[in-house]
Image (tube, rainbow, N blue to C red; front, side, top):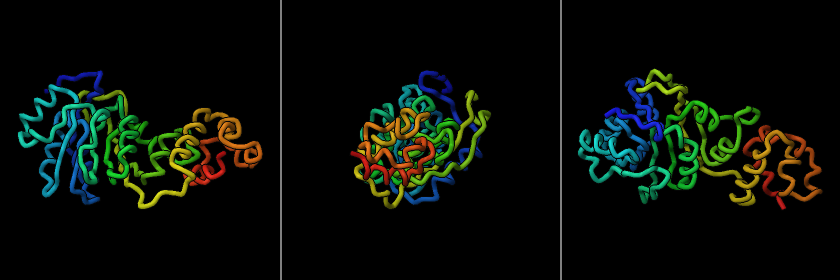
Length: 250
């Protein structure tokens, strides 16, 4: 069962107290549909399949784990998707919550995939490499605040719930882990367009050591660039300030 594949970033959660805390965090928000990403050895799955009155699906890439999970949980027969999460189509036609001990080697990509489905995903509870979890929740002024922080926080309120030591896993990863909860905002800040917002944020952080004036000069007229705001660096701007700035883009 615990045949590890480094290429898939596998570390199996074994600490039952951590599992219970993740499930408790999940139950804060009601849901009808639930998708587990990377169930692996089934540490979370064994609790999730017992939640009454919901439609549960899981997505697992590793064939060995798919075989194991189907033996342990025969009820998953038609609801276990044997693919990479990054390659699947949206698994539900209605809104669904996402939960998982996410593979660390693709965790940032997973978050961007969720952004593609944001209109259908009101809540995400996830365990990530601690660095990624902290980056997602980081606020302006922090050295780790960046593209991921701003784009996620435009659409979601993000709570860093708790850290998890490497001893909670088999085998212990070399990094620490963190659990975060994303709750979609009821309304988004006004922007010129979502595309403009994404372009601005990505361009600004592409050269984060430069002032905004030098980093995003291709997006604004010379007159606009004279504003004192452009003396600042990208990491000092709040999500709200980025949103407001889109209206000045040429």
